[in-house]
Length: 94
Image (cartoon, rainbow, N blue to C red; front, side, top):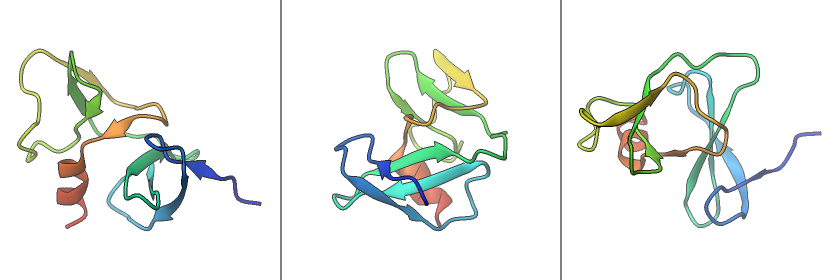
């Protein structure tokens, strides 16, 4: 039986969005349209994730207009409840 994924923003049930562009991550969308991410249990995430020291949104594409270039926190892996940048998600999905 597949476990239920709840949206990190509104706590509604989310469904998986098929995508091969997020290595090591599973992307979910709730009925409201929020995007959430969880880690795939069998893979490691090797991308770099950045956020400014005062923000909660994580970026993963240098092409993003909000990509932090100074005074940022960088991680190789994210917690399953992390909030990803909508612009990064949109650019990666194209």
